[in-house]
Amino acid sequence: MNFKFTKESIEKINADLVFVVCFEKEGEKPVPATLQKMDGAQDLDKIFAGKISQTIKERQFFGKLGETLLINTFGKITAKNILIIGGGKPKTFTTETERQVGGKVTQVANAIKAESVGAVLELGKVHGTSVAERLQAFVEGMILASYSFDIFKKEACRIPKTLKTFLIQAKGNTATFQKVCAVAQVMGDATNLARDLTNKPSNKITPTALANAAQDVAKKHKNISCKVWGLKEIKAQKMGALLAVSQGSIEPPTFIHLTYKPSGNSKTKVALIGKGITFDSGGLNLKSRDQEFMKIDMGGAASVIGVFEALAILKPKIQVEGFIASCENMPSGSATRPGDILTTRAGTTVEVINTDAEGRLVLADALDYACEFNPTYMIDMATLTGGAAYALGELVTPILGNDKRLISLLLAAGQKAGERSWELPIIQDYKKGYLKGPADLKNSGSGSMASTISGALFLEDFARKNKWVHMDIASTSWAEEPNNYHTMIGATGNPVRTLLNFLMAL
Ligand code: BES
Ligand code: ZN
Ligand code: ZN
Image (tube, rainbow, N blue to C red):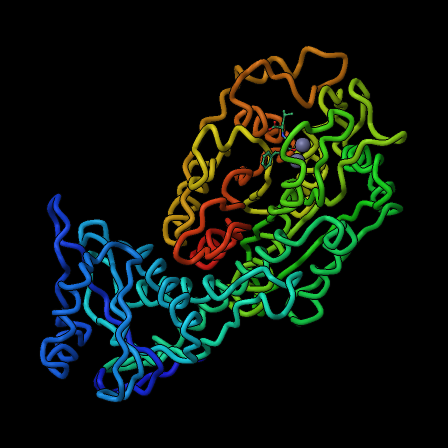
């Protein structure tokens, strides 16, 4: 997207479409919305001799979030169309509102084949949000809504993405606004990269293809390096858990190590660890449902790769290491049997009670390896438990960990990103069941219904004494319900922007 700044008043902005936001009236009964002064809407209404507000009444436009009213200008002003867009109730306004509006404007623009949109930037505080925060969220919404997953469709069935330029009327110094737009673009692109890797099916994104995607990022950017291990090196590393999960598949496992180094020296080092199961059939404990959905089981890994793509451009002053354990979980004559006992890289023995609890196994080896880099913080991301959906639903990511400060930083970063998260407690009593078998640990059967907490309990010790957080994205890395900026059912790229906000704020 090109971002251009102009001093022209709204009727002279040279765009295919200019938009103004209308808020919903407080009160129970919906009433037609009124035009605002701040964003030039009332000026436009004057030029059209009150016809815009008249249309708002006639068409019963209430200003609900994402509601749209499109008016052709037939040459009366420079822009070809005016879009009135609903912002919802003023009381509920947050930066997320901007993200939603940005997404909807982009959808409408592409639907009418507009190449440019224009608007007036409100400079003051709006409900406690600064202009930079609002602009960033709005542009994120635009970039996210520009994404679609249609590479497997015939050309004729794809919606062309015509929108290329955002013309912004802003007074004063526009250099900082330009920077804000650039950051939003990078964060949006990184999210879209993670979405794309996750949306692609398991026959396209194998463990080897996932490693290639990580290497592509490193090839593009001088400040990123990427090392990939195959079966031989993984064996040499004694990653017995990753090997046990992968052994039923004809696809060899990969272990991916990404590094971002800042230009100067940095004491702070963050390790990001991603679950990279490119297909989770359940193994011999074969899933009886939802298998067609299990291409998403590398969503954590996809987020790690997306984050590195953005780090290369945003260049924060900290070091970041990414670790991805990737394989397929398949049933076959060579697959791990329920009851088998494996030895993890850390030397812990694990009795595999359920081959479908494979994520914690591959993560155990990845966490253990990550510890050797002495990270200040360790954050793992994994589509680990179906229980995440029962705990917090589809819109909130459970966060569990051993460091209050790290957790609160991530919660705040998620809030800013429009990726909601909430802390779940790590209840040690639920660990008892894991200790009952013949090995050091069982991989399932904690005895608690709280499977998301149990998952975190399994991982905890593999982070050793480090400050560590686990994000269970099983329910939030995929959206069944499109919104204004996730225009289709599919991957959300969660929690790419949470991590980027967190890393940039460190
Ligand atoms: N990949 C699944 C979790 C999952 C479920 C992700 C639904 C996305 C949507 C994971 O490997 C799994 O199968 N977990 C089991 C663990 C159980 C066997 C302890 C689960 O949650 O049922
Ligand atoms: Zn599983
Ligand atoms: Zn899984």
